[in-house]
Image (cartoon, rainbow, N blue to C red):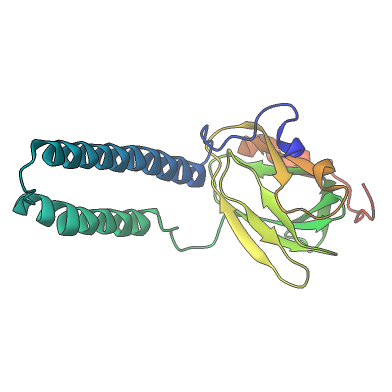
Length: 217
């Protein structure tokens, strides 16, 4: 928990990408939906207490049985299915590809180049604004988890496996990330940054990065 208390809060409710927008929308829907269910339950409890105190045998209205027992659950399921369909990622190759490897306790970032060479950075990921970014995740030792709350969901980095996470940044700036899987005594010391650049600026930034693969931070 201490990893989330340093500097700016790690909040998913201030989205800065298309994928993070979907997550924030789901959170809002769950919050308001839970509140609605709570209010309905309180209303039913109130009606049950009032019917009991009146001394009359309780009668269950047909509209209540049909609405609460059939129509409401079906409506919720239909809404969830529709949202899942609309929020599904579009097919197609991302416009920008980067490879991230988790180590104890730092992040290695590799930028493949068209020439076949590569550029590298440590604990800082440089990406373009407004285009889909494919982040290929793996690890060299234990399981880590790559998480940038303002840009989208988290995904595990697993040794011997490549998991792909796609972000489409909608706002330029510096976004804080953190390893979200306990990976040992240095877990809290695994923060990183994602820097979203304008497209015209990114090429110059990448050209300034080293071509030698790092072996330690």
